[in-house]
Length: 106
Image (cartoon, rainbow, N blue to C red; front, top):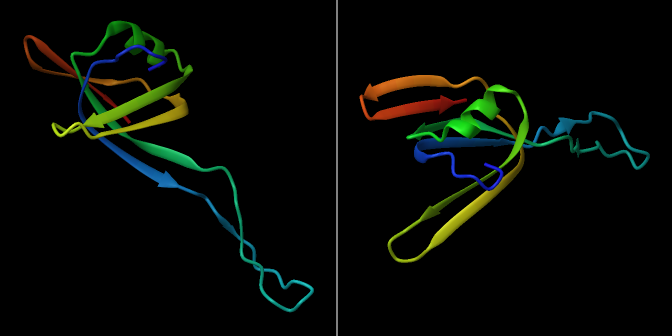
């Protein structure tokens, strides 16, 4: 998050919504118009283990962040993505073991 590791990702789920608005008007040529693009959004849930305290405190503050995430396979293949404007809600803390604290962001 903003170039700082927030911890080990235990699980993550992302959903993309393009929010296309249907336009039900007849054009001058007699055909029905299609769809009007709107602002797209990505929502999801992320569970972080061994969370870094600094991003946790900042997330509670309600600031927008750049979130970069990635997945690497043993064969050297890497998939990375970046979300330019992420808002994290107040996290739900779960203590599963004395040494491990997991934080869930939805």
